Amino acid sequence: MATNITWHPGGLARDERVRITGGPGATLWLTGLSGSGKSTLATAVEKQLVHDGRAAYRLDGDNLRTGLNGDLGFSREERIENCRRVAEVARLFADAGLVAVVAVISPYAVSRLGARRMHDEAGLAFVEVYMAATAETCAERDPKGLYAQATAGGIASFTGIDDPYEVPEAPDLVVGAETSVAQGVELVLEALRRASGGSSRQPE
Image (cartoon, rainbow, N blue to C red; front, side):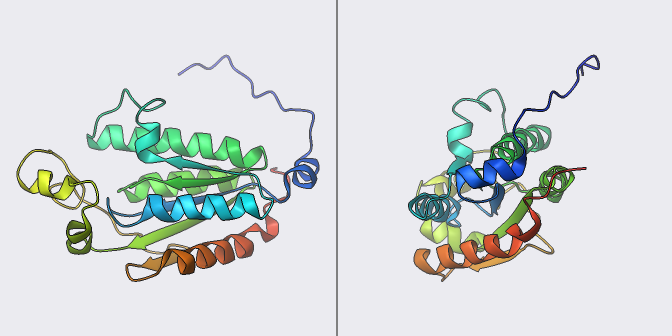
């Protein structure tokens, strides 16, 4: 790790960005098993935010693995690094005044805690949304056919089959498996409104 580097602050105050972007930056972190509805809900939330005049961008786990995280596999260490990179990007987006809508499995509590701490230290709102669908429910849905492949031995270290998922102990919001997309959007946006009260303060 390089040590001869110095963070160079910009010339815009966070309050100034808020006036331009339509609201304070924040990160919505959707976690849950594959097939739990993360990407579907994140897509709908992003669309609603933009239509409401809020600058927002969706960071989808699969999309990021085609580029930024394309060099990472699925070992525990690589999954943790995957989440660390996503959290760093989300924090930068939030600092720029956008709402980063993250949809990643993020199976380990240490990764989600690290992402929250990163935002807390920067004075940015962070909302952890747990998509509470069981492995059985997700396997029944199986929109990408991944559970069938994993069960047949075609995919190793598949979360929920032969790799663990650590259920969040105290998420900011739990979205049940039977929740409609429209209901989920309203729940997430309400959680964002609650969390954004103090997020425009400058970090110390």
